Image (tube, rainbow, N blue to C red):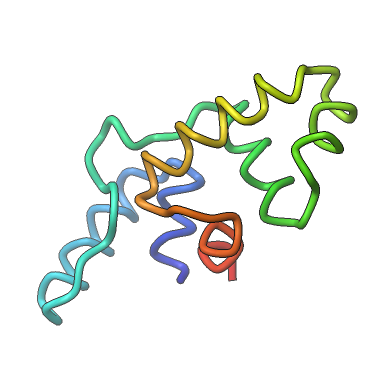
Length: 93
């Protein structure tokens, strides 16, 4: 999961190494293309969501609307190739 954490952190060099390593093992890393890099705000919201905060709690903490938080999470999920907060949390582990 450290490989996926590199994607979340936006570490392009580590992502490239991880991708080659996984490909050599017949595995893949979702969303390793350059466009998959998360913005600072996406990383912040993804981290809070992965820590178990609800969209409402994230919105309150960051002074955003719930809809804005959910929009950011939707982009994060698409970029990382995940479909749930549980999968997002697993990327951090």
